[in-house]
Image 1 (spheres, rainbow, N blue to C red):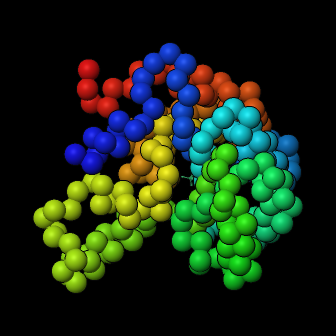
Image 2 (tube, rainbow, N blue to C red; image 1 turned 45 degrees about the vertical axis):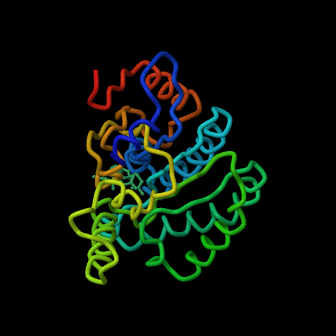
Length: 247
Ligand code: IPE
Ligand code: IPE
Ligand code: MG
């Protein structure tokens, strides 16, 4: 029953309906740089510029929630220098952009196990989240050290612990109980999931939440993604017929 309720809260089908919650797998920074014979770090720098543009555009286009996949739990497999470049960009993004975000009414949220990042990054994130907690115009969710399978493991462990402690009946566990223990528990259902750069896979992103999301794969490399591209994606969404299993 709870799953049915979730589906009803999602944006229904129909002409020009606007998504409430859009998530983006920001992919293609490395290829953007390679095409220009630049180091990968230059692609990531431009990727941050694109993220900045898209956060602004999301506010202007009236999105309630924008979720950006910035660093996956599998991205630790990259060379240490690239990881360090990415963490440096994250630090700079928080330092440089927090004022503008706070003033624009953006609430910052993180999904993923961000506590595993460097202590100074964790502290910066915690302070940015506390500072913007009262904002309600747009929620910017950044997925950091995020993996959907790991998120589900955390949810299952928490359910198992409660079952062991006699707090819940294992046979009564339903989809709503799992929803409630995911990092996204307080966010509206995912309506539209976009991946840039032509890759057609989810790479461990929002596997549970994407159950009824509309999927859009675009060839644009992330550093080239702009407001028009986001507006076009939203327009595509408005033309999709969502059925949630019904007729
Ligand atoms: C996405 O761009 C950014 C992160 C994963 C952090 P990539 O770095 O994956 O770029 P490509 O896929 O190599 O082009
Ligand atoms: C997914 O992109 C992760 C992020 C965009 C942060 P990847 O580039 O890491 O994904 P794969 O390795 O191509 O699946
Ligand atoms: Mg990639």
